[in-house]
Length: 290
Image (cartoon, rainbow, N blue to C red):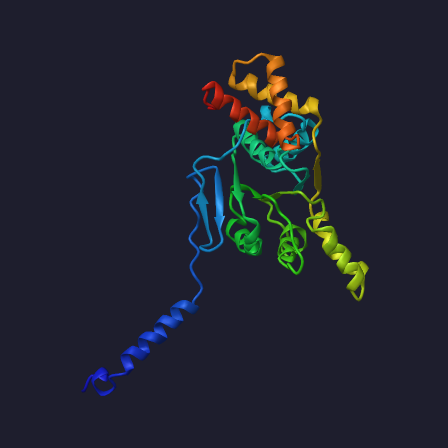
């Protein structure tokens, strides 16, 4: 009997192309993520993988000054979640450089140091929010407990990805997985610019409904933790805390004078500015910040 590829020389390339097309159309088999490699991961939406983060860039909880009230609230909320008790999603909003993202990472480390069952911190980037439902499907039902963290979360005009976030946080048919909590930081309390909400009010057929849809995203967060610009005393207290912790040799009067001069050249006072000053001071003194 003659071979098919001899009678039909074009059949084999055609079959090969069909097989390749079927492979591309078939759903990928999602491998169970290896979660024993680290206590923090970064979500890679392009490959649908959790990438281990060997060393998290964070500061010790005790070094975060001027935010005692919100610090204690977030710590308690995180502790309850780690213990399997009811806890809320949290939105940390407000002034730039006041330690919002630092607090999330420090709270994660603090609770892990005290808890027998460690929490896993997973960072998802703002531009990957649309893939959040897929991430939820991967970790839903696992024994581990996850803090999903998005830094600098906000939405601009014509951006509809906030609807994916709303469904995951509270409104989807499955709801938020019991082993997941969502922490986000933002400079905006309602995650959207004022002119975006005003535009909905002025152009919408039913403006009040349009506004409510967008503002209701923030309502999905049970905790709203506000961070405000610090006073000079709070700014100096932050610096004194860093200097004491790292044992930098400098007189208090000299430290204050230089710290005030430093913030005057930047036109702002914040935890970030305080840390930048301490880094400069430590470099000048030849002291590593380990």
